[in-house]
Image (tube, rainbow, N blue to C red; front, top):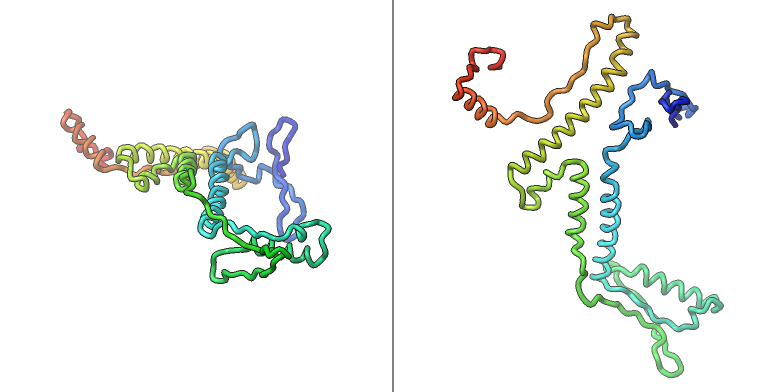
Length: 258
């Protein structure tokens, strides 16, 4: 759990660590506290996957329903007809056992390598069959495009993570300019996340290390990340060509040339 002060600030965290599993307080001064954003001052922050949870929740359950529906469409819905007497709550012990075994047979009926069943051939005094088993089939196809629904939730999760550009080729739509624009947004998001990581290390980790090692503050280093987005040499070449045609001197500057 978290240890908070009177103003809601984070003082540290309690941990049950092996092998002793004794509650141990870890002060925040001895930790690097990473979080995507300090929502409502919560030390837990806000998960990047939070916005993906709802589409994932529905997709998982629709996949289960689709599997059940496919099995029912292929195998049919088994229905057993039995005498009403064995369904009576006050029926004899043997009748109750027979009724339970038939229920197990109906719910466990599957189209597989062990397909098969045994039903009693019994008739009442009037010659009517007492036991029967049938498969109830559907009258037509489903009204829902299940594949389209699952693809919709896949797209929703991808959009939430700014990675929907990965679906452009799968849907056989989308231009290069659109893909470049979408990947640029994703690169900017990755860069912002790296900025947050660097900021945490520079503000919490590096000063502590400098102080513990007795180093002067003016020698404090700073952690920076490199560029996330790859450089398009074709665009740079066209840009330099346009500058050259405008009369801007470029190549005499060695640093700029590098």
